[in-house]
Image (tube, rainbow, N blue to C red; front, side, top):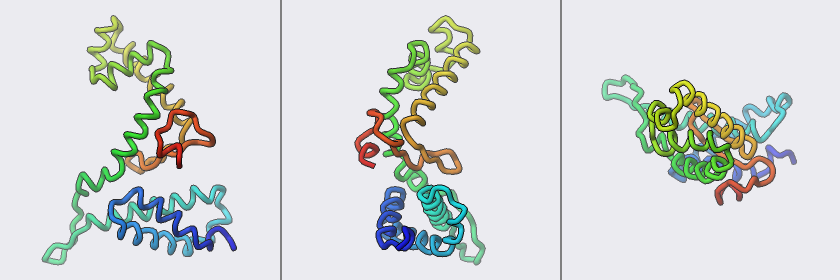
Length: 193
C-alpha cells in the first residue's frame, strides 16, 4: 500500500485543511477535493522530491480555490461579479498564527545584539517611526533604517532556522511548524505539531 492510497491520508489532509477554514463542512468538502486532486495528479509524483510539500501545495491550492468560489456571487441578471472576501474570512486562523509567531519571536528578539534589539523595540513594538527613533537614539534617519533592516534580517534568519513558515501568494502566514527538533521558542501548538 502506497502512502497515497493509505486511508489515513484523508485524516491528515482534513486536519491540515480544518486549521485553515472555519466550517467543518467546508473542511470536509475541501479535503475531499484534495483527495480527488491527489488521484488526478498522482502521476506527477515521479518528479516530486518531497511528497509532504507536494501534498501541502495541493491542499493550499484547494483552500484558495474554495475561498475564491466563496466570494464569487451571481447577480440577478446572470452576470457574475467578484466581491472582496469578508475580513474575517481573509484572517481566519491568521490571528492564531500571529500569536504563535509572537511567542516564538519574543525570545529571538531578546537574543539580538542590543543595538538591533533596541531598533526593533522602538520601531516595531512601540510603534515609533524610524525618523523619531533616529532622533531618540542620536542616529541619522538612514542609519536607523539600516539598523532596522539588519535587525529584521537577523530575526528572519533566526526564525527560519527554527521554523518552517508557509506563506500564501499575498505573503500572509498560513502555517508555522518547528524545523527538526524543538528550538525552545515555539508556542505550545507549534511544539506539538
